[in-house]
Image (cartoon, rainbow, N blue to C red):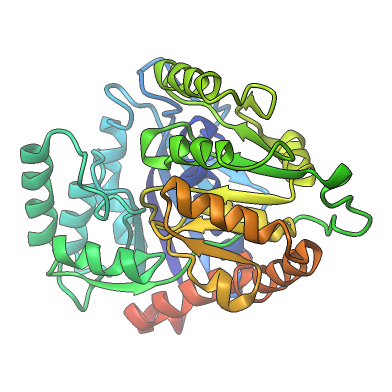
Length: 383
């Protein structure tokens, strides 16, 4: 089966964060699947300005997993690449299935249009963009863009890939001519690190927030929750964002007299990120809303229990026994932290790790995705 991924930015465009890593990991797993021939079309964009580019020696670039990535030079905004748009017709003609990622991006409407004209099935990873519209800007422009996308969809031919039931419902409200299927993101499983881990040293409970610093993440509520608890509760905040917003969080920390208990570490990646999990007893995700929330899966894969807000789709952490799913107001978060610090964190962490191994490995996710491809293009599956 020939699969073409069309995505605005691709690895190593790591400035765009989680979606780039998850897209890269999915493609690696798909390329290793028997019977899948994969190509990727993308731009060289690696940030919000034209000058933010990934360094590419050759295009197509052959990736170690065995697939080619076509990088097109972007000329305006973050993903406007004229040569890519011109090449879409022939590349889509090659494919049995087109996997489109992103919504409000220059390649989206041309890809949907050409696939409609060429009667090609589409799996469309919307990445939660249709789910969170409350504080969006340019609503009229986005509304017109969505109507154009919707007109190019047909439920039997275009399937939106969503990562939770909440995202599915919200996405279908905006794209009612498409269908949708829930397939979670996968997680790269690190080596087990809980053996010999020193849980709550000196009776201190070490909380970790890891992610983008943004008002939607509810970090203020977490800081106020920590202020309600005793001195043995510490919080490490790992992430970056708007400088003014970070300054406001630091000012709030000072006003709550938490400077000796809350530390800001900036963005962490690679080994620093692993070390952040190793130095944590509980990961707290206080977001107002999320479509998947990769950091929950990352924490559980590292064997660290979580407290996830009900703005995330992770209610199952309580069923599995690897965390708590609570409201994200300061009082509820404080109660949850107080409760979980007296639980067997090592056992909870092990349950979370086992869950990630069983249901969230990239191999398992790729298998589910291939089954979706085969359902949409059975003729291609027989090749």
